[in-house]
Amino acid sequence: MSPDDLIHRPAEPASDLAQTMAEIGRRARDAASRLALAPAESKTAALKAAAAAIRSRANEILSANAEDLAEAKQAGIGSALLDRLALDPKRLEAVACGLEDIAAQPDPVGRVLAEWTRPNGLRIARVSVPLGVIGIIYESRPNVTADAGGLALKSGNAAILRGGSESFRSSKALVSALSEGLHSAGLPVHAVQLVPTRDRAAVGLMLKMSGIIDIIVPRGGASLIERVQRESRIPVIAHLEGLCHTYIDRAADPEKARQIVLNAKMRRVSICGATETLLVDRAVARIVLPPILADLRASGCELRGDTETLALDAHVQPATEQDWRTEYLDAILAVRVVDGVSGAIDHINHYGSHHTDAIVTEDDAAAERFLREVDSAIVLVNASTQFADGGEFGMGAEIGISTQRLPPRGPVGAAELTTYKYLVRGNGQVRP
Image (cartoon, rainbow, N blue to C red; front, top):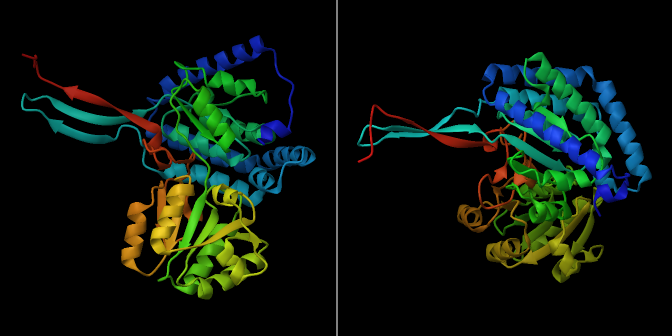
């Protein structure tokens, strides 16, 4: 069930809501045309000023978040979603630092991606340009508000943000800080706008705003993604669920595997890069698996395993077929013993969501095969799946992890929020 279903809000009159969305769209298009031509220095200044505003408004933002949390708890929202929703001084400082990291990135607009000269003397260049207006629909996490707004600004795009109902106050406070940054740098404050209603009908209206919104980025649960892909009249950058796997190969270093698995699952269970299924090579399961299961259990993780895992640990609960298909976003892990790297690859490609998957091994050949044959946006060797994050990739931040095959794929940072056009320079050439 979506958080929007748990916190009921009365619907606005359809005509009023449609008028509100039309006005937001008009402002966004005007802002996008101005922001596309903004110098890099102005965008950098706006991002730095927004980060400073977040710090100066910390008490206001945290107070708004406390109200959101109290309402969400009263509505019965689960612990994983509450963790996504919660801000504290450390997390808020990370949000501000994220904007500064985005500011420090090279300007993605105006890059010459390729250039060549034709035999007739025409000089052709492919140059990056903003997408225009980006509509971002997301659930729970208020930090997405700042990340999405900051990345849109950096890439010269206007953003229309529709956050989850449960984070409405938090997102509103963060957008105010972004607006302050835009204003201080002389950029249009409507470059980043939050849909000012919790009415779910606003999502449906956004998905029909072709000609106003150029791209839709949904970030949330499977039901949200499915709805957006089904109803949108606008191209979509899909961020599907993070059904991530870690595979321990027969050539794994046992201590390295132990540390990686614990971090991959338990560092933060509510993020999309958390490992949800652990796969272990049958050749070493009896040796490497028991201490790993003990570590996980000691950290409060519920374990669900296949028959071979149950034989190694009587405290593990039996796994069902559905467990191999579930993104828990909670302290729950499915565990399966497989027949080597071939079995791991088969399992991942069958059950996975093409998000992020990792192998732990000291065998270079096994590692290279895993990298080559696992069909996911991010594939790691000897590292935690929790590195599936634009900030950890050096992008400053991300709007999400795209799991689609068409680009962009993987972390979607500022550079991925651009398209390109061709600039052709001639000297009187005419086509024969």
